[in-house]
Amino acid sequence: MAFSSQILIAQKLNSSPYTRYGLGEITEVSTAAYFGMANSSVALAEYNHLNLSNPASYSALIKYKPIFDVGLYGKFQTLKTENSSLSQKNFGLRNFSLGLPIGTKTGIAFGLTPYSTVGYDINSYSTVEGDSVRFNYKGKGGVNKVFLGVGREVVNRGDSIKLSIGFNASYLFGTIENSRSVIYSNTTYYSSKVNNFKTINGANFDLGVHYEQQLNKKTKLLFGVDYTLGNNINVAKDFYAYNFKMNKYGLETAKDTIDVNDNQKGKVSIPGGLKIGAALILNKKLILSAQFEQKSWNTYKEIYDGVDETPIELKASSKMALGLSYTPTLMKDWNSKSRSIFHKSTYRLGLSSSNTNLSLNNTLIKDYGISFGISAPLLSSRSFSSLDFGFNFGKLGTTNNNLIEDNYFKIYLGFSLVPSSYDRWFRKRKYD
Image 1 (cartoon, rainbow, N blue to C red):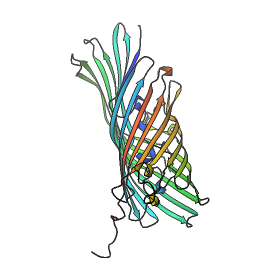
Image 2: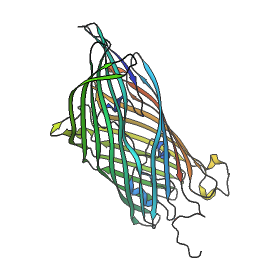
Image 3: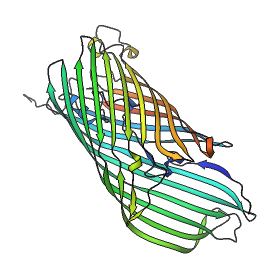
């Protein structure tokens, strides 16, 4: 028996071949504005942008100034092995959220965002007893997250010290389909396929703390912490295996069923995680931020009817990110200084280095990226509304040890809409 192997990758959704394991690629919690800072935002709390990475930041929302934020996402990538490459692109809705101030000390936020994405189509080829055989691994779907959060300011000593706390309650739901096929080039042989459909639903929670202190007239120090609680959520799996033949058009013709197991009940353990960050604000124009995060994916479990089917490839993940934000002209100076939109926009830069939650072929999968962003004000009114762009160049994985390198370019376009001074929402009118 002789074997030869070649790996070719194709993808139809919005992720990478590394989404094959567990719940897929975990989506970072972000909006377009902070995407340009490598999502180094847990220590920030701004009145004109909704910060989904720390629920304590919702307390910074200004009375009568709700924020509606929607984001569109695109990814262009080149997947490489040692002897082949493939370019892909994909687009989709990234987030849909609304922040509402409740009085002067409390804010709430709710919305919809992806929790994870799955999308891969992997082929490996070998020769078995003189016949060419294709092994196909395919997956699609993902998990969505609906969240509701509250942030409350609990300490306010004027301009010197402020402390806020908050929490998010999230509901996770979605379907993931994974399949494995053995396909013979000799059409007289029966090929075989195994399909797994996983339906996931359950609750998850995270807690946030935000602290700010005025060091002097020009400098403010910020700290932020967000802790995600680990939790078990429900999962049901349908298993279906069958034989088939491939016709001349490349379509399957099913022959007979090998095995069926419907509605296997189980639990998935969502791991806990911690994000901690600090930031400096200088002259109200320049923001420097640093953030570290860790998530215990080594504790992830996937159990059906008492049988442990946890992927052994999952490990604890970590990320370090640095961010910078600069606004040349503040809104209070718009009338007295240049009216150029370039002076009134906010510019962002970020760097990140991650150890992902995967270890394959004795190799830890790493992710490196550099980000850029700009928030341009919508000048039709004296509002805080902005058009936000975020860009991210990066590399995920490596071609060493028969692995895949994903060189990507991501773009995030967002709209942060806030009513103008003449259009305050939810304001009680004294006169009609």
